[in-house]
Structure formats: structure tokens, C-alpha cells
Amino acid sequence: MNAITLINKDPRRDGDGSVQVHLDPTLKIDTAKVFAVYGKGGIGKSTTSSNLSVAFSKLGKRVLQIGCDPKHDSTFTLTKQLMPTVIDVLESVNFHSEELRPSDFVYEGYNGVQCVEAGGPPAGTGCGGYVVGQTVKLLKEHRLLDDTDVVIFDVLGDVVCGGFAAPLQHADRALIVAANDFDSIFAMNRIVQAIQAKSKNYNVRLGGVIANRSAGTDQIDKFNARAGLRTLARFPDLDVIRRSRLKKATLFEMEDSPEVRAVQQEYLDLADKLWNGVEICDGQSLKDREIFDLLGFD
Image (cartoon, rainbow, N blue to C red):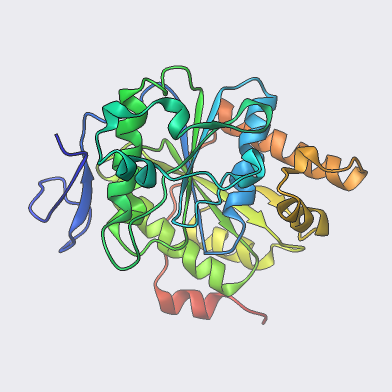
């Protein structure tokens, strides 16, 4: 059975007039809490995802992080290397997944976090949703989800098609990483639209916003108040965060200082909050004109 099909006559269509990615309904992740991390490209989703994965592991949870970007660099601060992607590994065996071992595509990272890089199709071809479907299928076939408490999907950039939204079909909660600026908030609004669409037919709901690289949050606060969102955590624009990426390290491995301890604690608090369950945000996206009129200084 194919893990994914593209159809436009599905009775559970996710958007008026759209052609959406529909994953095999039997490929569900039902043994773990699943979070999908979204946000504007370059906003720090991989840094956020990796440190959140470590925070969950520090709380004693068994964590699997799945990078969903052709750059396949979501997990390199955890594993200290660029891992081969699921698609590359499948291609090497002519897509005969029974020839693969878990060690071919799952690597153990810092503090026991299990890491997978789904990768993506060649530029200009294929669909990111197919890659997500194949990755989950492979994990299920090898029973790698049975011993997992938390799964974190780290998803590339803005949501512009059903393929990018495919992880939402597996997630319990979607988290949006945003900075205190117009571009990332505009992208956040589109992600809210995608979550609204997917929540009609799937279990995913919006968990909240993670403010990143932001000394202040006045613009995020304005948008949240209008759209019905909430900020779950805030991480300032600290040089130690930038240096951690350059050192191929998580923040939990950086030199000890009050600044580093404060950021580590914010991640631990966020992980604890998510594990124990956050109230659903009944967010409503805004029209483009509304965002232009809303944001900025009076």
C-alpha cells in the first residue's frame, strides 16, 4: 500500500478547491505525544526543536526528533554530524525498506535523543508530504515508535502546500516559533490557517507560540490578542544560542553561566508544560490587510 496519495475528491478534503496530501490512515503515531514545530524559515525552529528534545529527555522521556527539511540539519547539534536522510537511505536499497536496519537511518544524539532526518525530494520535484509518509511508514515497520514517549517534527519554513502540512496529520499539538517582527508573524498567520484546515479532519490543535530571538514581544502580543493565541515560552536573542549552533551543541552542553541556566530552565519549563498538557488555542487567522493594519508602532 502506498504511504501517500494525491487526490482532489476525498470526502475529507482539507480546503476548498485544494489538492491535498492524504497519508495512509493506518500509519498513525498512537504510542507517543507528537508535536509539530513550524515557523518562518531561519527563525530558529531546529535550535528550538533540538533543545526542546533535550529538555524532554532531561525529564526522563524517550524522545524522537524528525527533521523535515532537505538541508537535513535539524538534528546536527544533537548528533554532531549531518545524518543521511530517509529518502537517501531508501534510494540506496531501491526502496526495499525490508533491507534496512534501524541503525541505517536512526542515530542516537545527546542524552539519548533518537534522531531521524526525513530529508526531501529533489528541488522542483516530488512532495514533502511523501517524504513524511515514507518516514513514518519506516518507523512503524521497524517498531521504533513503540518505545517512544515524545515525537517532535521539525518542519521547514512557511506552509505553502499540503506537503509541508503533512506532519500536522500526525501531531497532537502544533507549536509556532516566531520573532517579534512582521515577516515571522505573517508566516505564523499562514500556519494558523493550515492548522485550522487540518483540525477539521485530524486531531491536531494549536498549542501556542514560542517567541524566539526577541528582546520584546509587543508585536507578537498584539497578534496573539487579536488571533486568540498565547505565548508558551520566550527565548531572547543571546549570543550563546548563536554560538551553540556553531559549536554543534545544544544549550545543555554549553558553558555554565546564569544566562545559560536561565535559558535551559525555560526549555525545561516548556517541556514540562507540554508534557502535562497545554490548553488548546482556538486561534483564528487574520486577513492579510488586518495584519498590515495591526502591527507596527502607533
